[in-house]
Image (cartoon, rainbow, N blue to C red; front, side, top):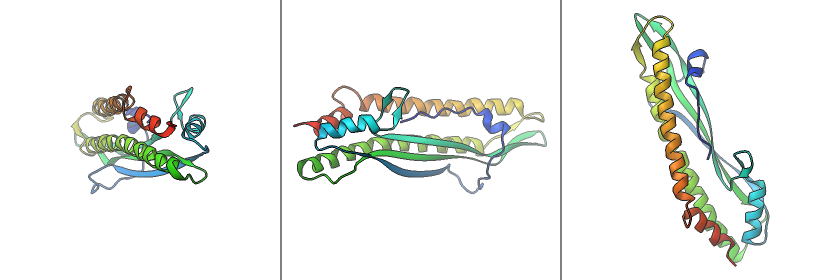
Length: 199
């Protein structure tokens, strides 16, 4: 999982694609991609995942990962003493990354792999759920923005930026707390890996 960190000021100074006002939620897309691994045993597959998995930080690799690309939509304008958003919204492209054996597995190993992959999918889908919740909250905040201010909207957009940052910070904290629970000693991730590699 990668945390989302955005500078809300980017929404203020740049132009963005239009989002329809009728859309009450964030614009969210989800895709899945796989990287190939090889091995004749669970341990061999695990070692190959550690070599080929998506990067997690500078020096480590993840077995599976949820990646996010975010974008603010619309612009801010001043009219009759108020600053508002026009065609405002928020989009998030979510990509789930999973390992996939390059060659078909058979027997006990195939059964273990299916259970292992099901755990991966459940884990990453929860990261996606948290991100979707945050994205919809940000979209509502942007779309509902209308504040009394002077031309230039500096004061109101700074306040909007702080509110958006707070929503993103809360999401990042929830993602981190979920990972901490899942990756704890004897937790779901450890159990899933041990079930795959046991002899």
